[in-house]
Length: 235
Length: 325
Image (cartoon, rainbow over all chains, first blue to last red):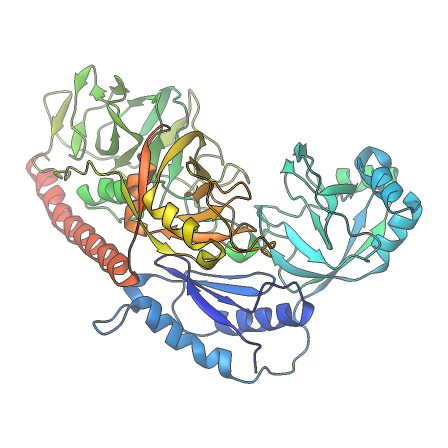
């Protein structure tokens, strides 16, 4: 059984299935199983967007509406069986990807401050950040921006009170218990502790984003030299 | 066989019906802000409703048609001129090679659309021609149109004496001078207090200058919030009305992010988004609650109308071209 859920409209043309306002791996695993399952059904949809604890189903009203019922009711009716069926115990979805990160101060404007706040050394912060395997809970905010978690509780730090106007592409940050990577130079409020030379988004790749919801990610530290080398190889 | 930007406007981009199927990767749909006007421009030419168009803001560009083309302008009235003579909106125009399209001034609205009957020679990205400025993809090299840009389209031949000629059919725009924008309650409607819910429906909200293709920031009575917890990020939609911690509202527009963490108290119904998309900073709106039944019905009626118009105009265009061969 799936955990308790609610279904509410998100305008005419989309509905949200919510499993509560929580950030939990088990719930997110349910969301992603449902996501993969619905993607492979013949049900007509325009987009299915998994998030931490919700799945949003976008549809064309034209394809669903009948004389008897609204498209919203018809979609809801079609989705209910998927929500009531037993969740199959299957292997965790997604690939495992190791991401190189250069934690040099030049790429990590918030590393020292974060370490000081937590009474840790910068090396300890790097050690803790690279020690875990993170789950990509969802992709959002920008094309290819992964919301990953959870970081070691000793690293959890709220967003900066005033966001920066330009965070360089590749920047790796922490916000609350989440860690993420900026695919583009963008304004943002995450605490930046390093930078990856990998391209999180490439319009010319057949899969334009490096990561997908459900992937597993590990980070490993690289030197500034290695960073420059890496960049020149993929540029 | 091309159109050349002689002078760039404030923000001119290629847009279509949107890029769907990739929101789970954070790739937002984008597309025309006023979907109705964009589809109408195509329908009047008998083209596919979701075909690419040029979306123009004011100050608007100057565009030179180097070869014969049949065009249609819809949406905002920027007082369009062809070689200095005024032309109508919502009516197809046959244009001779070397005709210059310019705009005299803004009479009303915020976004004007240009459709061209000739097929565009543009490369789609992920099944869409819409320009995504953030990812620098789609449309014309993923960017706004600049002076000197040339967009190639297929040749079209017809005989005509004058510089341009209005084709004999047009869309009569109904007058809508109300400021009512209908909404459906959103997933976090209950996060407002009863007073907040009442105020949202009774107060007027003005569109602030901090409003663009991503979203409209509204200014009005600060709305009372019942639940103040953080919302874990979840998907949003074109038209989603978010409640900021200050109690003010933001309506997400075509270039909205795919997910957000503010309570989604309401959603503007899809048929009222075009009206909102044509409002400029300073305009005031009244939010009126409606039902799913009504919202869907209006959307279907509008779509059916456009499909019928497209079919009729397709025949009309074919006949006109035969008569002018």
